[in-house]
Image (tube, rainbow, N blue to C red; front, side):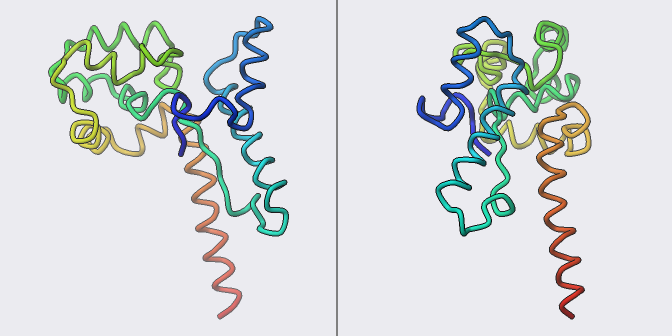
Length: 167
């Protein structure tokens, strides 16, 4: 899992995203993540051709930051942060879905939460909110995150199947 705003400018795929945006393309967060994840995968496969990188590395770019996932359940986010739920709904309405919140480090989801309640603490409160929301809701509301989890789960299924064959 990588945070888009924390990766280097020369990260695989970053130049392609910049090029497309500069040429006028209106890329969604998902489209940017797809470009970056594909480029990361290719770069690893080229750098380590004998390491089976296509199976050992499953890239996931969290386009804005972990807190975007917390917008999956406005009620729980509001309750746990003592923020008026209508303010959370306004943010969601502006962006359409949690994974699309923000395209600017100054408007990161955590900064938007902190603007509504400056006592928000990323690590302790973020973890508690995510636990209260639960993985099923995070998966339902955040399709990119869900698809990454599905890919990870397939590894476990494949590994179990392989172990059964060897017994």
